[in-house]
Image (cartoon, rainbow, N blue to C red; front, side, top):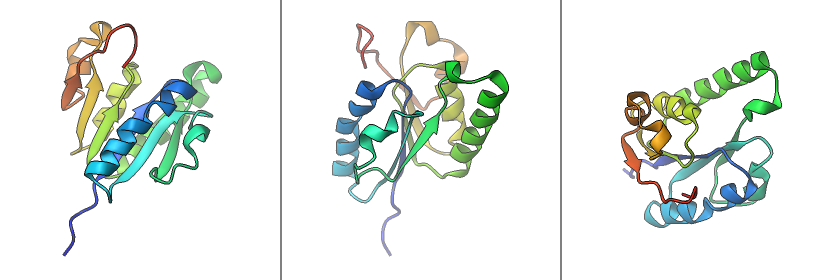
Length: 142
């Protein structure tokens, strides 16, 4: 009987360059867990930069909050949160510090999750949303 394939969610809600900078994380996961399944969560339109990367199982897209009206954003966000909740992730890696990342991490029931430290986010809701918090790199970069 084989080992269970580890399933990862890497979330980076920023722009094309930041999405591209996730490739070392993807590479390291694949080095350690060669049979892992990796999903990438990005802003709509930014995932195309990695669409041909065969290490990625699927690219999930979130709406940037300024792009639509409130009702449309809320509806799409609920659908996304439901999808995250229904997918059995083992690990969640949240590389940006928007408050919605904390909510998304809470949807990954049973997964080990990590978020990025941020002075503005050091509130109980943020801290308790993740299994661990990675230190901030400084100068606005992670």
